[in-house]
Length: 77
Image (cartoon, rainbow, N blue to C red; front, side, top):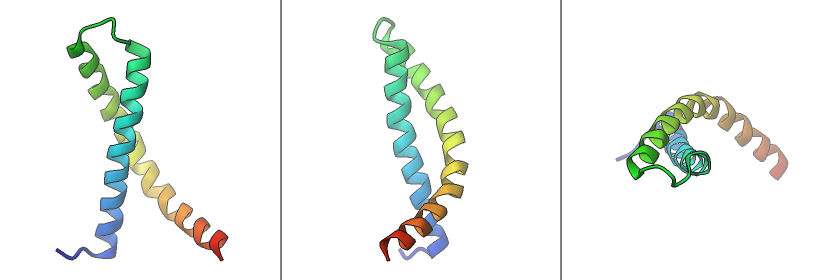
């Protein structure tokens, strides 16, 4: 399945945001909530935090990724 350059860009951003926001929100949720509560409570808090993180991270990445790619290209010359 061939994807256009724009579709590849959007897929890249989406996958990176999903992975990064997942790991960071889980880590911070564990630090904040700890293991003192039930696993269900921890998962509930994490999913709320993950949703919020992804909502903030996706538009941020959409704006920042192209600028970073241009900067890397300039620095690599």
